[in-house]
Amino acid sequence: GAGVSQTPSNKVTEKGKYVELRCDPISGHTALYWYRQSLGQGPEFLIYFQGTGAADDSGLPNDRFFAVRPEGSVSTLKIQRTERGDSAVYLCASSSWGRGEKLFFGSGTQLSVL
Amino acid sequence: AQKITQTQPGMFVQEKEAVTLDCTYDTSDQSYGLFWYKQPSSGEMIFLIYQGSYDEQNATEGRYSLNFQKARKSANLVISASQLGDSAMYFCAMREMNYGGSQGNLIFGKGTKLSVKP
Image 1 (tube, rainbow over the protein chains, first blue to last red):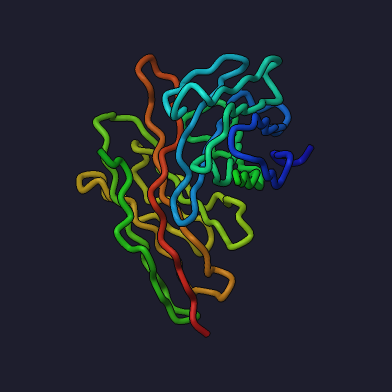
Image 2 (tube, one colour):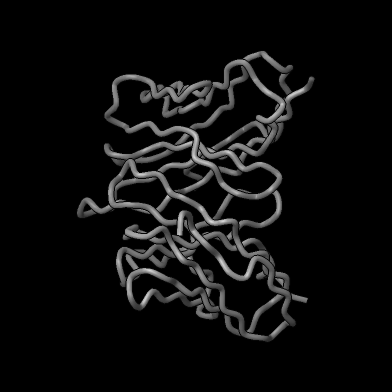
């Protein structure tokens, strides 16, 4: 596709449930990032993949959060036992290799935990 | 410690005037990149401009320019000839080089909400 695609665009779930958020990056981009953005705040880093491996997962808040990118393209962010505080927009971005390479962002998934 | 500081939660500017959005950063790396993104109310993050730490000249992209003062660790965004469509959140961000030379993740500030008045 032409841009970064995230599905679903909106997800409403109940406290305690499991959710999966999908990101389809720009074709050929080796780097993929997950961010979380709460209302009125800047995006907060969660995890960064270079190829299939997580190069930096220091932003994951706890062990309920996990992300995979098994074939080096599509990535899935998985949240177990969701809590109301997990409600936020989850943004995915991809980029080519390089320090100056800009990140291209998807439109995000609005997660609401009731 | 906060690595990117944007001290202006909100700014107003008259249409057709210039505006400066402030950004200071904190890093001990010699090699890093600085970015500005725009986020309209629709939510998408739009890349505006990039400045590398070794770039000697300030970056410019159309009406956007980055006033890079390395010694002060500041990377202010200047928007010239403001337009109504410039009303949005603006985020400053930094990417450091990790140990070993790999690129790091992008760290964002809290943003500045710019409102352009007709």
